[in-house]
Amino acid sequence: MITFKPKQVTKALLAGLPPRARDVLEKRYGLRTDGEVFTLEAIGQSYGITRERVRQIENYGIQAIQKSEEYKKHYDLFIEMQKLIDQLGGGVIAEHVLLEELSTDSIVRNHLYFLLVVGDPFYKGKENPHYTHRWFTEKKTAEAVEKALRAVHQSLNRDELISEQEIIERFRRELTGAAEQHHEDVLKRWLSMSKQIGRNPLGDWGPSDSPNIRVKGIRDYAYLTVKRHGSPMHFREVAEAIAELFGHQAHIATTHNELIKDGRFVLVGRGLYALTEWGYTAGVVKEVLRDILKKEGPLSREELIDKVKKERYVKDNTIIVNLQDPNLFKRLSNGTYTLAD
Image 1 (cartoon, one colour):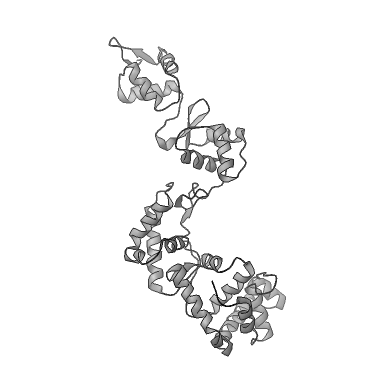
Image 2 (tube, rainbow, N blue to C red):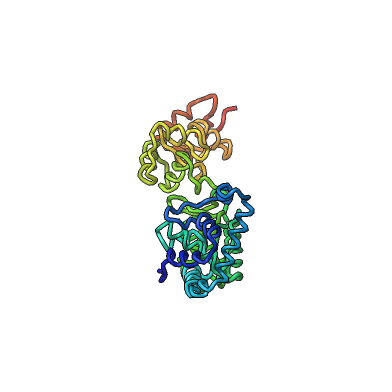
């Protein structure tokens, strides 16, 4: 994708610097053969100077390169990088995305990053709580994209999960005219700038701080598994599906214990769990019967069976047997059932 060799270019740019300035830049940006990046503190200790002095030397080195004849000689490559930012990101792109697009080699990426820092046809947006490090060629475009990303995040409920197509459509609506000028791949790259919006291992999108996105344990894996399945699952099936979907070994007993303890799940049959958000309520069959009658008043046996089976995976006879408890239910003269006094 790039027509120049980053390592050769950085070597040429560094060659004209005093030895210490060159050494500081090589260490700070991982430009040596091992690719190791040093902190200001570590470099300062090696020279017996303060971290602030190291920073001054770093800034001096960069400014010296930008004023050098070697920089002017290679200026076309900086224009090439500017065009790549426009081509790949429509004028603004997350730093990690740009580097990943340009090379699979981590050391080469270090050299490319250094060239981005040295170059002047583009600008860096520093990382903050809302966005990752990003590079842009036009401030107006960058501001429009960032504003749209904030609006998309505000439109998401805390535990909402939506498809990639839906997140792109929401993004398009917020971008208005800017979206029409760019391919969907560019919109996806823009989404990757946000630290507040994320994608889970199954490709669903939502707030990045939600457990549905930042999956941490069996409970979160189980939730995504059952949600994707779309209907109640036996805990054994859940454990097997977690291994299949996420490549994460889930012990059956552990999975069952986590399902019991998590309020996002409700037991709806022998070993069968559904999601609470689907409208199922907790409790045994008698409790379900009691809640239905308390809410709706007297109902026939058939009506009760129908309503309970929307809440629990049980046989008709199990519901009928539970209705026979005289301490909880009473059969009226017209054949309907109500709560006992």
